[in-house]
Length: 121
Image (cartoon, rainbow, N blue to C red; front, side, top):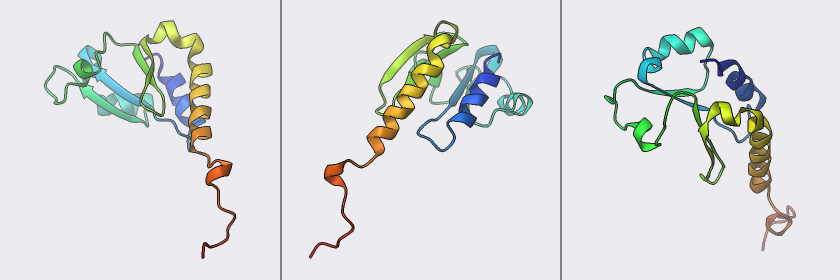
């Protein structure tokens, strides 16, 4: 839960841009997610898997190893980082900004597919 203030700042910073934060809670910390979200001001989508009772088992499907584990997935669905949140923390903001800019650039129309505003006859 220590990372929530930083995660909240990322959600605010990238609001309206091609970015999504998703939380997956499991094990002892996966308890009452609604209460934890309210307590810590979590506004992004979260899933809970307390004891493998909720299908699909996101923890197993994503091969999450432990709490504090993170994945950075680009706009094409390619996993760019998967591992310890702590080990990646110093690079996260830089890498995230680069991926968001990459997604924005890919979404912009290129000169070849822009129209000049004239109707085709």
